[in-house]
Image (cartoon, helix red, strand yellow):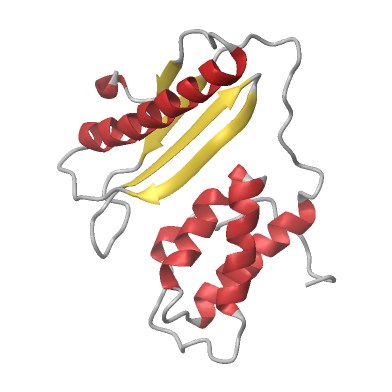
Length: 181
């Protein structure tokens, strides 16, 4: 991968339509590669959380197209090595969370996917991208579930920051859907 060309996004726009009908990927270190990507996602790279979440769904029976998706993430990382999380000393001590969800994005199960990011000092302190535990009946319900996950994470963060720093201020949750507000 050292001589591979970098790409500007970790996943293709049609990543939710990966064709699993192609031949299985045998003899390829798929689990090891996805495990390495998971470590990066958890530790320092929230920008690859969605793409890694998608490729980790096929750990049991990966295909060549899944392997190509994993290699694309590595190519993205090659071109974005200077990306990082920056915490601003002069910003306020306010905890913020952002949530978003798709609606029935998984074409097989029709389950939606939630994404959340919690920030402090203008830098991400926690993030996740995962399938919702149940099938929802509307976009609004998917947004509610995502917002609920964000609020639960914020409450935990608030208790932690209360112990460490005293009063962290009133947390704020941002939702991009008018019906979810």
